[in-house]
Image (cartoon, rainbow, N blue to C red):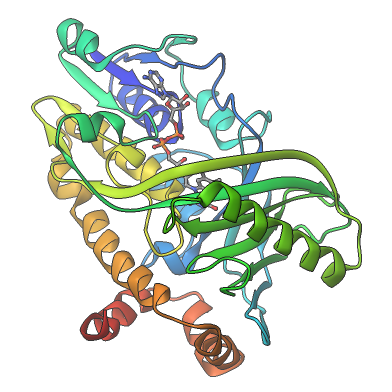
Length: 359
Ligand SMILES: Cc1cc2nc3c(=O)[nH]c(=O)nc-3n(C[C@H](O)[C@H](O)[C@H](O)COP(=O)(O)OP(=O)(O)OC[C@H]3O[C@@H](n4cnc5c(N)ncnc54)[C@H](O)[C@@H]3O)c2cc1C
């Protein structure tokens, strides 16, 4: 059996760790010069989005012996709408770092892989099919899934972000649900040290002039933050991504090709989270190859979550600022506690059932 992994990101490296554990040495091809060779940004894992698994870091460690160190747990999360702010004082998840940083999730996963990673190797799927018995497609984008007519795109998003210097509380994450700042999307601030944070605006691509508009929104958000935090927030790095596709493949596996991570449809449409799902799909693909399970069946719960998440996304797109104010105000109290307190229930699933008739 000869297994090729296309991409040394979250899903590809997770697959490699499990394959090696069961005696299969994959060949890992990475088009960039190191694992995580891209802009640094802070991301998050929210337990609200991974339920019934409450603690994704602990779950990966206990169930699969994949060990990841986050930057911080999150407590509190502060949710803002145009006129309301709610502080949720619960442990709601973790922040972590991605990209060119020795502690990035990619770097941490790469350190748990023993097979040599072939860097600067941008390989084509067609080549790999000829030379290997199995291919794990883990390129972090949908291009091959689309080429193979195996992908349903539901939306695409533009993201503009920056690293800023300031004084931050590591464990405090803030989110803005405000159509003036991010129409039908959201904006957020995630610290990744006591002096650095990422500030990001994410909006669905609804017009043809996204480039100009996302810059306008981002500038508005940046100005608001500076006055809100009363800090100058010096920008030290910036990134912009357009046409980031959110969708899902029709078949998680075609022949001996396994679509993992974003190639599978790991990004959940509601808030664009996909790290945990990407790692799981990598693990499940490796399980299938090692005869420990069936990829289609193992990924089925993720496919269902994707559908729930898509309903919530469509619901969110229909909300105006008045509605956001109403919802954010209600989170201050019983509703917020029920949503965010650690429990084995999946409230988003039930919310998606409730939203279904209206979306
Ligand atoms: C700005 C931003 C913020 C985000 N925030 C969050 C968040 O807060 N929480 C969350 O859960 N999710 C978040 N996500 C989503 C999450 O990052 C992704 O779902 C996840 O990284 C996807 O993992 P992956 O394994 O599919 O791809 P990646 O981890 O991106 O890895 C893909 C790898 O494949 C390589 N590659 C590509 N093409 C080839 C090729 N032809 N040959 C060889 N190698 C190739 C790439 O260089 C890369 O190293 C965010 C995404 C973005 C863009």
